[in-house]
Length: 320
Image 1 (cartoon, one colour):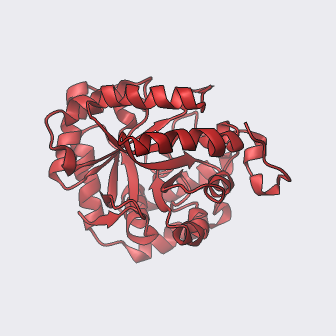
Image 2 (cartoon, helix red, strand yellow; image 1 turned 90 degrees about the horizontal axis):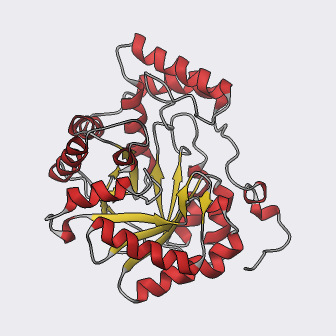
Image 3 (tube, helix red, strand yellow; image 1 turned 45 degrees about the vertical axis):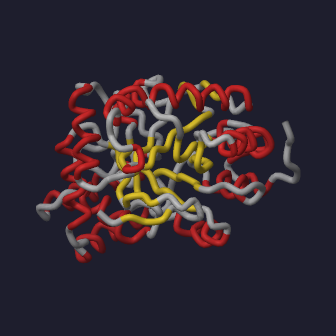
């Protein structure tokens, strides 16, 4: 498993990151022992970056991950969690809540420090507030030794760029925007590189859209996008291939990101992911899938507050 340095943080992370949201039963019920086994299998296969959030399963994912990592040498893995989002419509980016959230996560994850703490889905908050209160609170905890690096996550790339341009952030995490269907994250890479901000790519399977079974009914993508993704999955099936394998291989081998985070809740799934990225990318199949997806390339959806979709068009920044 290849490792990459995460921007200017000095943290070395595996090219494949373990997305722990399934440990919170976000994608359906699972057996806790299977989730713990998945974490141990990931470690044995060289995966050392684990990403979680108190939002996933209303703290369940953090609790299970903490159990799985109990007794594991702390220096052998990089642990990332988040602050600010605690429910589907529950957001709190105030400094007081951020401080309490970090301490709560430390207890659930059974550790004395967090390698990376990220403001979760900043597009649902006031971006000025994130810049002037949330991130400074995390920097204070960094100075105290509780946090090693500070980042932001979200869907609208404009929101991530807006905040990163106004205050230093160590990492940005974007999801569903460097996939077979959507490559928009690549356009922002040079700006983040210049700022020495590491980019973490999440959800290369587009939250299930780029899988043979297809996404859950709640998937927010427009119908034409989902229809084309289904057609691409069928194209792969007819050729004896799995679109999920192609999607993961593409994201990891071509993106150049610090890490690509994929959710897993069983040892079988994590073994399969590791096997996939060790195999060569099928260029011919990739071209066929790209042709199929071309009519909906880079089409996404709105997420978060309207003013946070393209904050560069705002004439003034609101301070808290």
